[in-house]
View 1 (cartoon, rainbow, N blue to C red):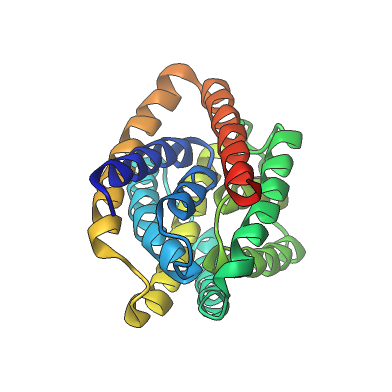
View 2: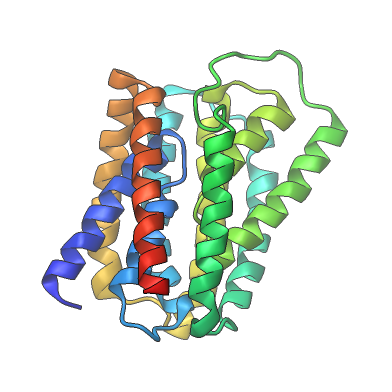
Length: 258
């Protein structure tokens, strides 16, 4: 990979870290940028596997920062992390069977759906500061587990937008506040990414000379994103996020159909 192309990928990883630290959805920037940067015909598993190293390290960094400032309820994290890990394993296995010629158009379709969902649901990642009292019911916990299993499959197979969906699920299904949900969501998301790495790394689907500098930049973005969220608020980050997603969509569509 050319140095200038790698620098562009690192910039995308940094921006993704900033976005993920606030509301999730950084993969909407990082994964399409990677598909554009890698040569045509590169296996989708290799492109996404390389991005998983970056997203995993960034998510863990963001989770640790939230955990230092807010107590964790492991009853609402550990079981769902296990479910998400299982889903991630299955999704990554399916990814290894994907063919490059249909993966890019499929990626564009998935990206459009996820982006539209994020645009239309303005509450997703926008900040759920309210705290709802009372433990979640058994029905709600089971429903969340089933939904997280599906998100895990999606994360292992593709991934962009999963963090925002998980945040929405935690807040709306468990009826917890934003601070209660954030650290848990990032830990569950990290379990999904780790599962994908367990599947993809032994099969040689990670380009380490690309993934390591991307991971460093993603971690830096996660740290700065957490600070920026405190100083400027989620509304500012959301506007930047939506602008970037539109630009990436237009670029990817042009690359596919030109």
